[in-house]
Image (tube, rainbow, N blue to C red; front, side, top):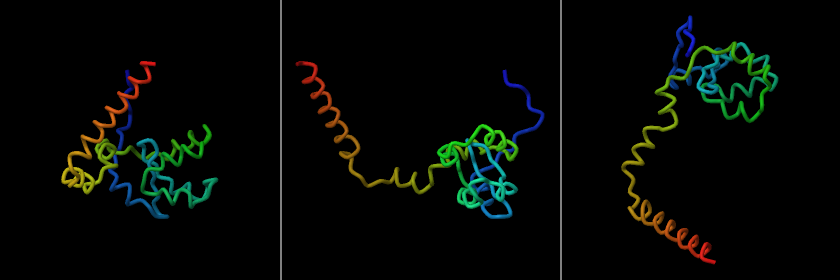
Length: 133
């Protein structure tokens, strides 16, 4: 059972986080948590530029690619100011234009159904020939 928190979680939308992408206010997202790293810019071992490049956006992939130590992960917890709003998490990677393009697409039905069906049929025939030997 989850323990009750003495402090309510503050949620931020992607639009709110994107506004914090300058030297006076630098926020990043790591694993759906929002971090204010403004005071850490000058102390970051990789340099200020590394954090500034990710400012106002999701830095999770780059953070994990570097392979931060457990000490760095523990220290990062002190910079948490809130969490990414669940709606932003779900809809954040899909732009409105992408939805329109998908729905109003002029691509013909054969590229969406016939080609995959024929491909599946070929794979099934190849499997049948392979198992028949």
